[in-house]
Image (cartoon, rainbow, N blue to C red; front, side, top):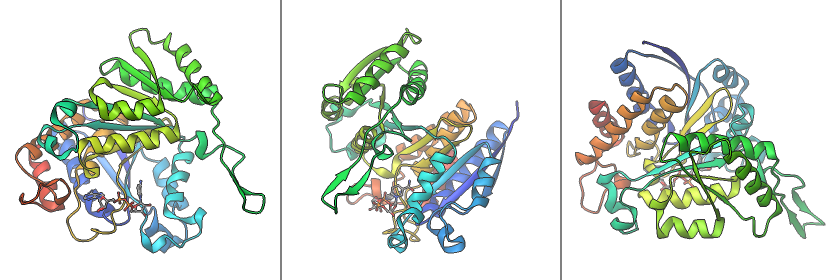
Length: 355
Ligand code: NAD
């Protein structure tokens, strides 16, 4: 059945607009293939929004997002705005957007494209077949807990890790539900041997597990989880963890697959989800037509699946990226020395052809 969706498009800074252009072409191609209509409305976000309006997340952008079914983001930030006041920096816009739309669960898939198996620093036999979904809590924990600050005349710094049962339950529920649709294995990561807040985390996840008897639940301390991710990443299906542990583990896991330029993400939990690549605005290569658009295109794939329930569209995008890679198309970030490389547009075109 043909459906219609509204998408707020926030290209952002640096390579954001270049990769977004290719992602929107892929979205249109999916629309054509499956007879759906996607109405994209562009809005200012990040550094470019600071330049034009004085703030990273202008009210008009929030309004456009509110009237949409999903938000697609490029990346924000760059040296030009590094001197801007902390609460007006591009990254502050990102935090404000997550808060505004209640995006408490960050989904980061880490999978290996067979064509890129040699790109990882790990041995083939360790990473072959790896397919992990990390679910990171995004709006609580030590990054937000009070008290925080530098006090006692600059001699003491404090941050506080806080989680409520409700905060743990809602993110764990997302993780259990995702596990149900995958290999039905969930690993909850905490530091409950040392931290009280982690004991609450673990108890809450244990209780919730009774509602998901089909899912096999395990627990790991975060230090062990960091080690297991490089020792034997294939043991994992879905991982759920708090904000800071998830921040660190997902960056570690992202390198298993070879390049930042391949990794999409989703922030969900509210009425509207936010879909963006894991990487930043790559100011060092911005405007040169070199950026790898795959992570951005795969973020469109995640939007199709998690915001619109269009699983066929998601598969079409994922398969297209996989086939383009298998046919030998490589942007500079994923090419081996001496290998022929293509630019952002050619890579986008190669993916489009496969959709
Ligand atoms: P980055 O991810 O932008 O770049 C790190 C390295 O990876 C660079 O060498 C870059 O060229 C390369 N790279 C990243 N994406 C690529 C792609 N698609 N294709 C090819 N190469 C790619 O990280 P950074 O340099 O630490 O940060 C740059 C800016 O981005 C900073 O202002 C930072 O705050 C911001 N940032 C934004 C987000 C976001 O919008 N969600 C996330 C991370 C960083």
